Length: 216
Ligand code: AMP
Image (cartoon, rainbow, N blue to C red; front, side, top):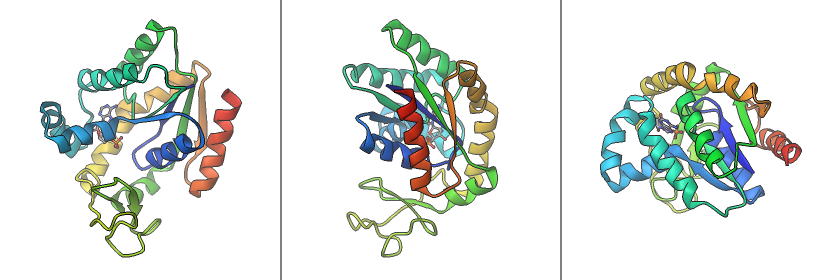
């Protein structure tokens, strides 16, 4: 099964994608994680994308499409994938469709996490990440046992450079202008399922699981 997880920054895509891949035999592919790994590794691509990420702007389509499609190609044989953060523009969605069509495949389900704008800024600005295991916390909603320290490996938590209030506002603008049109793109195909993401993690997860089970 090929699934796209859609929603604004802070909607909980990463958290739910991890939960869903634990529950099903899907491969989780996060475009943001892929790009951040390139930045950390100091690759040529990482250097080129860092300025876009830090400014809260989308990386140019051509760069991200190349990276994600190469990964998908390498996944051939996997029982399914869950795309988190990709596609983010109509051009990316069309490239993805074309690539899948080329091997007789398609996107089967698009899960949209709906969260009102007023929740998103707080959710993102309070987010802290473990630089070693990448586990994500929130200073209020999901704090670590010891403030600022990862429960799993004791590393000092950091705030992503693009999780500041100023950059978040840019990311929300980019979502509204470039990504929100995908909702109609997929709705027209009858594969979009919308889930209320402004609730407890477990409640959201159970609705997402129901949508996946219905589509299987
Ligand atoms: P995320 O972790 O999904 O919030 O992504 C963090 C940042 O990576 C975004 O704000 C963009 O700068 C970049 N990015 C991730 N995925 C994409 C994509 N599909 N298209 C363009 N830029 C992306």
